[in-house]
Image 1 (cartoon, rainbow, N blue to C red):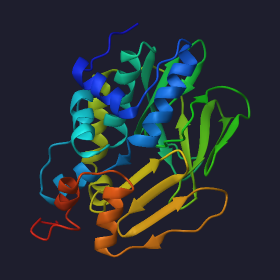
Image 2 (cartoon, rainbow, N blue to C red):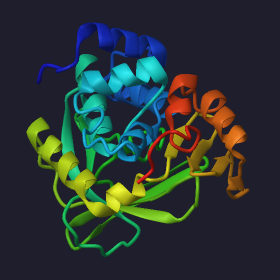
Image 3 (tube, rainbow, N blue to C red):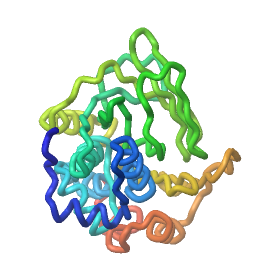
Length: 278
């Protein structure tokens, strides 16, 4: 098994913060770690948002240690590539074989564009998808025909489409479906991951997308998401829809509901009037 690239102290502090409990069985170990990750470490663009606003081209979280150090210090998560690299390193630290796998994520099932997403597949005798962007709460066993799952209020299903594994998911903010297309399970190197990160985040679409803050978390009792001034929390099948929050309300929500440090929230351009917003 590949040795984890993560620093020992960072790994131990992160597992302690996650309140991770070890298991003898590899599948149980994977599920336990992923469940606590989804409940604690958000998918977000807050650090990227700050740098875009300040015209800083440096990408945040380019190593697992940097990603997890930001989480420990400020409650920050990150985007798909650094999140996948950090989750894989943490899985390897707890002795779970895991690979980085590229995919394409979009809102159209038949999209055939190049891969724009990085995810993690654990090999525990069967292959388990543990995606730190979708935050579904439970691993998805790949390849089970017609497989589906429902971890309220999120749901997923998988199927084969012309040889491509398509996983349909629904998120907390809009409830609209998104489609994760995995054309192969070829392990990707950290170097490939870095190039994918630079390519996707250097694209104008993503630069423009990062002019608005967004965050997603699955806290165990339900899913929460925020995008700009909109906030949504779902705890069951009912769809309350997003609500519009005033800046002061959103600041409090980011700190109390999502667990971000007050220092990080104050640095966001939405709440820090001296930042340059290009």
